Image 1: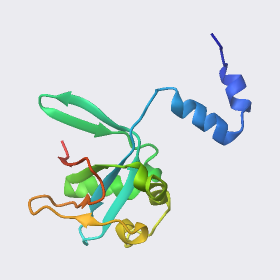
Image 2: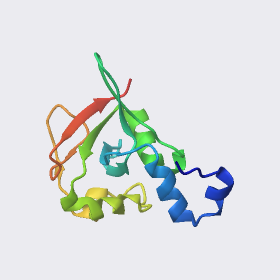
Image 3: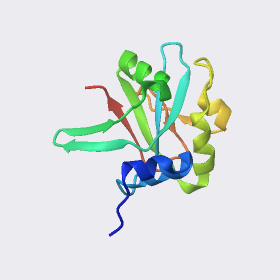
Image 4: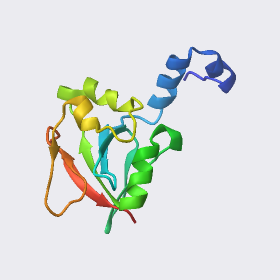
Length: 140
């Protein structure tokens, strides 16, 4: 077994260190969290920290740290109480990382990425049409 001390890890190049630490917990799926603010502007954010919390009742959560990394997403969910989760697939994986860009709040990520908003009448936030697995959540 190899052993790496925190002192050793701290000496590694930043991205190598980040990739190493990010991989310690194993495979993580990657999804878009999609919201729509009170002005009708949609927001897509890439997350690899969507987690299953329970099945009865069905509970899904996500970790948003630091808050400055995705301030619009958290603020919109807190104000509207809803979002959608949309799995990211290889066909648009590289494009998906563009949501990490710091677009102004009034800019829709759908427009910037060229993805399609898909609306269901009873759900406030849109889905990503190109996504195969997608579901809506309400804030608890």
